[in-house]
Length: 295
Image (tube, rainbow, N blue to C red; front, side, top):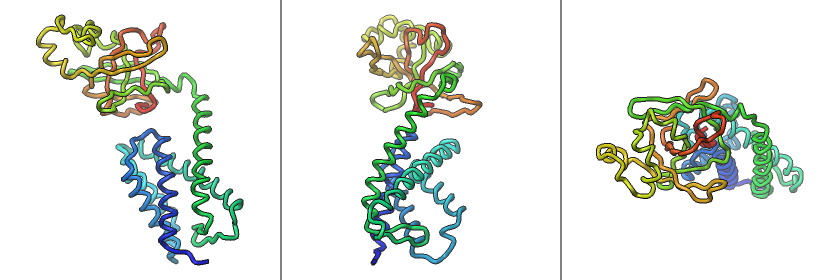
């Protein structure tokens, strides 16, 4: 069987792209299609070099780990070690899932047309396996993550958030709400919903006590100095919830927001505080809500 190098590159490029795209979806990170394409091409070139080369260096375990880290950095540009490790684990999980499905399909779709060299499978089966494997692998991952999410306990969904504004800081008990997909519509920044009563040490009471008036365009109750400083900073955040199909929150960007979970502290640079006028819980177990993206 004649195997062309360009076919090997294209096949690996497509598979790498699908795996990286699935990794990005699962890890809830911002997907940059150009970066994923470049990263996929790096992996495809490595796979091709491994196929045609007789050097054992391409099969070295450390080299493969280093390549995986490079691929993750190029594709997603993680901002810290924690994010990089999380994305690397999900990348391997996705790769192993797709690989397992593909290996099974090899023995279903014309195995006589397969060649294996230097650990790389090639043959006329590949494009079929890529697309069928991608569909089955994605279904398996989605079902697995849904099962895992359903087994998360309430304790696992609790953390703390540290908010800094005007040189002052507060730390709030915070709940992770998997249904909270709230974003500020203009910038797309994720929103942490915070009870109004928890913000009096950070935001002037003239703003907090008049949120409904501000939403209605009535600024007469706001002193001029506070109006000049705060009104340009406020964001209008539409939301929907059970019992109120359409609503509006006032939002403001903090100087700093950190999520504290199991002694780990992670700064969220682009988050917006959404000011909620009522209590989030009857017993006061938490004062803020964040979505999975911020967690």
